[in-house]
Every structure is written in structure tokens, then in C-alpha cells.
Amino acid sequence: MKKQAVVINVKDNVATLVDDFTSGTEIHYFIGDQEQSVILLQDIPLGHKVAIREIKKGEEVIKYGESLGGATTDIKVGQHVHVHNMESLRGRGDK
Image (tube, rainbow, N blue to C red):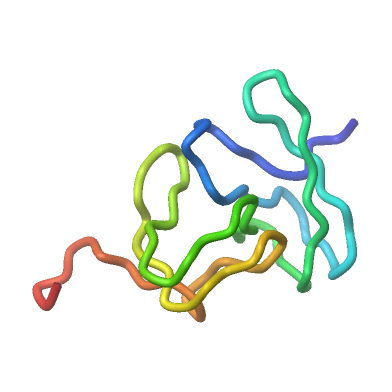
């Protein structure tokens, strides 16, 4: 199987896509040696993130085992995760 998404750490709640994919596509990825999949709810471009677990508003978005920021809305499994539904909490003087 051609790699479709990358998950580095078991804590991650997002996967990073390695190509452009359209809504309805089933994406396969590995966590450790276990293959898993998610069906995309939206078109998601190369290099962007897809939620592989539900992320509630205010929860951290975790990629590579590190927090990228917080969800500004509830994010469903299969949804695109980007600046429209999360905000960075790093390097900010206001939070």
C-alpha cells in the first residue's frame, strides 16, 4: 500500500496527508505497526492534517507527540484540521 498519511506518535490526534485527497476517500495510516483508516469528510490538500480522533473545542491538537495549539470548534474524525478550526498557542503574548 502506498503511504497516504503520516502519524508519528501514539498521542497524535491528527495525521498528515502525503497527497491531495477528496472527500469520501478512505485514508490508511499506521500507528506503530497497526494499520488504521479514516474516511475524509472534506477535500484535504497535501501536507495538511486530518483528525483521526474527535477533538473537542479547547482540546489540544497533537502532531508528532507535541501540541500545535487548541481546537476552536469541535472537530470530527475525518475533518480537515487547519487555521479555520484551530489556533496556535505558541509564541503568543496574549494567552
